[in-house]
Amino acid sequence: VLTGSLSTLTRSQAGKLIVDNGGEIASSVSKSVNLVVVGEDAGSKLAKAQQLGIQIVDEEAFLKMLKSN
Image 1 (cartoon, rainbow, N blue to C red):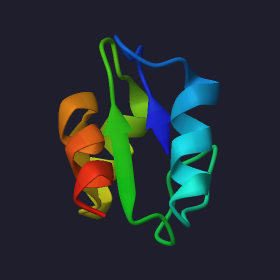
Image 2: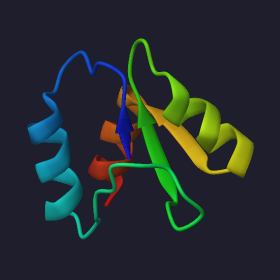
Image 3: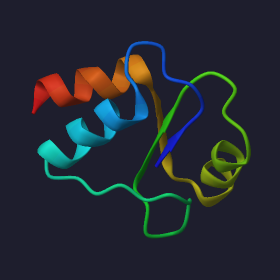
Image 4: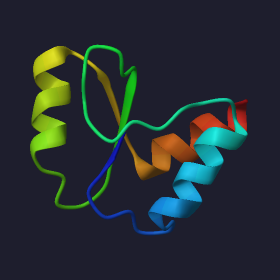
């Protein structure tokens, strides 16, 4: 799940990176989601991910994760 405004990527660019690296994109946070990428002004999706204990990363950490694959 992507939430908030990313500073270096558009949502479509971030989504393409996720899919190109074998991931799937969900539009809402649920128990089946394993990662939420947060940008500025993240809202209810961030709160729900925290409530469910889902891993949360910012844009910088997300990009580092992709480089390590």
